Image (cartoon, rainbow, N blue to C red; front, side, top):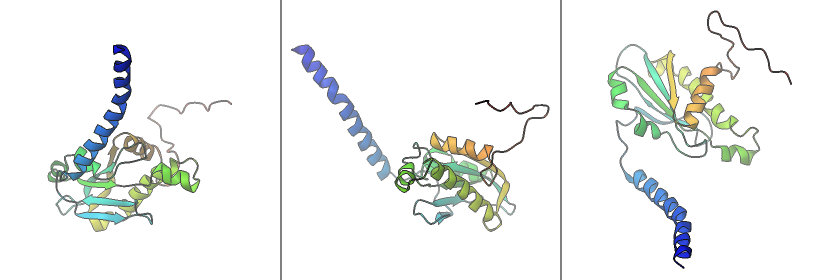
Length: 187
């Protein structure tokens, strides 16, 4: 009897843990966000309500390099406020580095629209947001040639994708000096 009660209790634990996770997220959402408010908030870079970005401009007269932050969440959740919880924005700004943080459309939206592969929407949105930001570089006093893309989880994957592709989504064909590309895979 004791063993059966113990097992029943263990079966409840995952449900309790899930509820605690929901409660923790709700509590975190109620807390004020750390760091300074963005210079420009919810700037649209596309037509979808999720295609918005925030910009924190570093003070100065010369174009500033910028951090391009892409939030994590498995391309299924999260938002641009992750930059405020992850980065030391005030420290970056005082060092002369601006910050851009984006929202993107989720995989669920792409699946509903029949997009294949569904990940093409969030990654494509990251590329579009970066192109949009570069197009505003003069207006926002950003150095479009000095960009550091970063993020957690899915945001890190999207950042890596941006680093390995040119501005039009084509794979970069650059190699280290003295190296050669691997031979194509035979099928």
